[in-house]
Structure formats: C-alpha cells, structure tokens
Image (tube, one colour):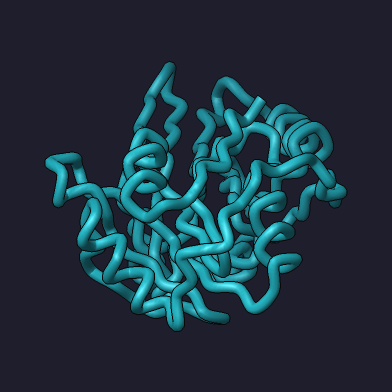
Length: 220
C-alpha cells in the first residue's frame, strides 16, 4: 500500500483481514479523478508455494473473469482492469488478465424518460441536494465522482455519475456494471444518466429523490 501511495495510487481501506500471517486489504482508490477498487492479498511464503498462489490466481481469472497484478508472494485483484498496468508499473508486477466475459443481454427495468440533465455537473447538483455529493472530481467521457450520503447522516461513500448520448449506451453501461460475478452493484438511472453507488443502501433514497429507478445486482 505504501508503494502504491508513492506512485499516486491511493487506498481508502474498506475491509482489512489478517489470518495466519496472510493479509488482505480491500481498497477504494481515486486516480486522475476516477474511482476504482482493488483487493490486495499477501501470502505467507512459509504456508503457500508459488504454485498455490498461481492456482488461486488462475481460478479467479477463469471462474470470475478477474484481472490480477502479481509477483512474488502477492496478488492484486483490480476490479476495473483499465488500472492494472499502472499498478503493475508501480509495483514491478505483471498483469494477468481474466478470461473475457460476454456481457449478457439481461432485461432492465422500465427506465423513465426524465429527468434529463444537460451536463454531469447538473446531475451532481441534484444528487448533492438529495443525499450529498462532496469532493466532486470530473472524470472522462461525461463522468464525475464524489462522496455521497453525508446530507442524510450516512458515512460518506463513493459514487460515480455518468451521462450518455444514447439510450443504447446507457443500457450497455448498466448491463456491464451488473455483469461481473462476485462484484455487487447498485445504480440509479433515468433518461440520459446513471449514478453508480458504493453505498448500496442509498439506492432507494436516491431513486426516490431523483425520480429514477434502481438497477441492482447482488454479485451471485
């Protein structure tokens, strides 16, 4: 974690486990204004061989389509694979991409045609009025990240706001966000926007306040 921090890749710890000398940390990170998650596993070399670690990585890549950065006695599951090369460069590891997963064309709820926002800052203002949207950071392709929940007394957590030019682009993004086994998701959407929430319990409140609908996946 210290080595990643020196490379400008932060870690806001969401979960930490230590068992029999093995260490796992779940991280929420922000890089260049974009939020993503990664999970660090460091294995006790007296208990696990390189083959053991390699078998565990192989299982994650094939069964769960996970992308890893690895070397020595550690591995990092990069939930958004786009950030894997930067993590590998920072740590001197190698990128081990997961088997490609076909995004299923599963049904979505009936998505309201309004409200429609002119820009992502307008969406952020609406979210801020409803439940909070602090520390706003513009991202790429019409996206914005912020920390939400404080306005209604919840512990602030990350959210990613996105605008879309076409309904088809919105629907593809919703299906992609809810396609990865082992990665739960809760989004609120309507018209030309979506809000991807790290605090899944906020989804119902956000949908009510913004007149949207919830798209949810439990990761199973």
